[in-house]
Image 1 (cartoon, rainbow, N blue to C red):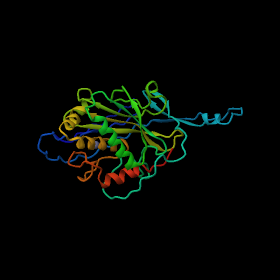
Image 2: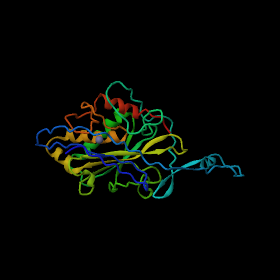
Image 3: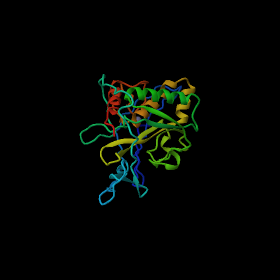
Image 4: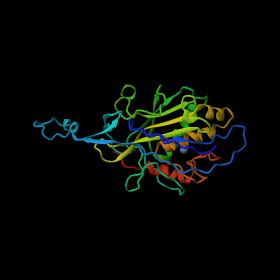
Length: 300
Ligand SMILES: [Zn+2]
């Protein structure tokens, strides 16, 4: 039993997924020995940015105000072999929530960084919409998800906005834009409960999976996270909740949400982003510093 990693990649689908190995200490079992953490395989989203210039050059008419915007250069990403237009973000006039200052010191790591070493995160000027698949959700599970979301929102300064329930299954090859289900914008963060029968990546002591895709801005500049996914092992977490260990289940959800907003694993045993579950039930000082920083990225 140890930390296992599987790097899911596909040239066909733009996505990023972390398979997360977390030891699920049995509700009644003794504390198991911590296995050494293995090196982290950060997942680089395969962003095939094919910059098609749909410029207004050559258009010999005066465009009404606002229409010219439609002809600005767009960026396309290749999804399932087709060029997919990167969504334009909704208008924004600044951060939705105040920046969270870094007031703690500790170990943290980012799943993705730009060339300057700055973290790639969700756009803090727009809500990070999330949807919940309730299939298989254990009693008390929704409340723990809501609490974990609130913790991550407070720690990042990102506005995580509940957008309702969904019937989307947590497929490995999640499409990052699903027009029929969510419209033409990036798909919202999917929070799903599943068994290891439905999601084999959850087999054994894997309690959750979390991650987001990294996508370019609509004009091709910059990079942000989008279309995150979080899959929770309904059996492992359900057993914890039933055994009165809801705090542990919530800690797992917070850990996975940490991945969704851009944090990577660290080896420090005092941080919740350690890949192995231990007695840590809340974000540690390094986690909080990292969460504040992923919430401070520029707006699109
Ligand atoms: Zn993890």
